Figure 1 (tube, rainbow, N blue to C red):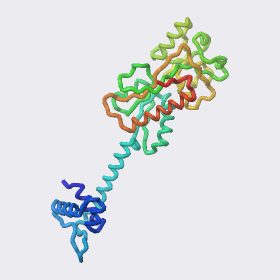
Figure 2: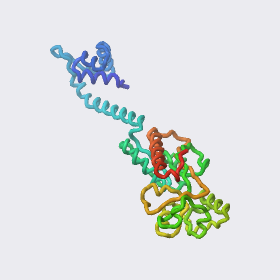
Figure 3: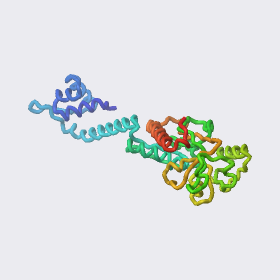
Figure 4: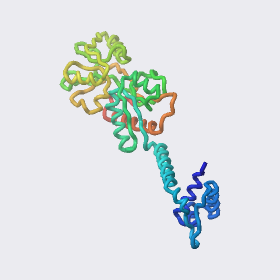
Length: 306
């Protein structure tokens, strides 16, 4: 098999037109260049250079090799550049599985910031229910997941980004919008939009209402926070869900108020425990943390940093 270093020396001599110039170009001695060219000639069984009137001239047979040699070194340059970009997290594709609410808010904000600094990175975003998002990560179908889940609920590598409080979503003209926080007793006569008791948040809400001796009457059960916000906007009722859709900027006509007693869920990045994570995906975690910090600065009463 040919030694690439031999070809590099041959290429340098061919370009420089002399052994001495090639030696200076490669920062090696002239005898080293001469020896390498001789070894390559022996390996190929071809004379690569001849002397004409004292000048070193590439032979016609060697000239035929030059296009392929140039193509080879072009490919090597591409490989090196790709490796450099991968090492620095400047290229590649990041595949993400996320619940829809986070995809439209936190993940979107992080991608906006990350893309500005790393335009060569591509994204493949899958908005899924929590169960399917976890499955995608666990089976290595995506690089990472961005999920909201109770503490200790995920058996995989987890980086907590923040804790999100359950909030009460109201129209701005609702009487309760004037309150700093909302308690179960204030919702006794309201039409409530929330998650089912099959969810962790739904169970915790039922327990909070039970402790306050208030009936937990959910009139509209949803499995998607955006649906809850849309129903509130249409005047159907008030919602007890998370606050992330508000961060997307699409619901300026609504307000959120913290629910008391506080019910929190973790918002975290998750990685499979059976697969090495690409450098570029690890770098994206910094963008997610920065996006959370910006959200906390804007809505600090709804999000808590770890």
